[in-house]
Image (cartoon, rainbow, N blue to C red; front, top):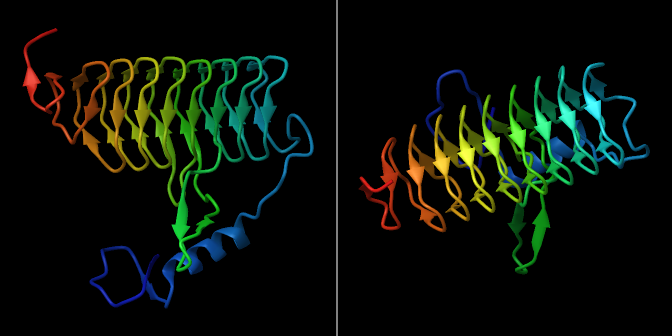
Length: 230
């Protein structure tokens, strides 16, 4: 269903509901159907943890989390509500998986109203997440880390970003919300990717660059052009 404040052409398989303030209606629906639940126990009794998973001391696991076979959650990690972690994953010490999205609606008085995040974090099989990474859950969709991808320490993945399979991100990479990174992409240290961009399959972006929308393949330089240098 799409919430809009004016009639528009409806995409196939969708329905449009016309309301005066779509933002307020959406936030109200999410708060009603996924109400805020503060943690009352270190590992929620409503989490589903495979018996072969290893959970080190100090890990906090919220309600409705699923952790798959042979996954290894290292000390002091936080796994937020509704997160799904697949099989054979490693979550490094102090990683924060599934905090609220950094998403605020500006009000007429210039203040900001926090939205309730209704999405999840989904980490597919054989993913490594380094120490101190933060992966925010989506607002209306899911944040996804594709199978086989490897994240170094201190990386931030914004709300609703979709990372493909077998990607490799070096330390201090930052990915803005709703960005799509296709399979087999390499981002070297401190690459910054703004929100809602698209990085094509097999691209390699050199260290400390601000990545624009780029196509697949090749080694991409600061001005967004491919180069043969490796």
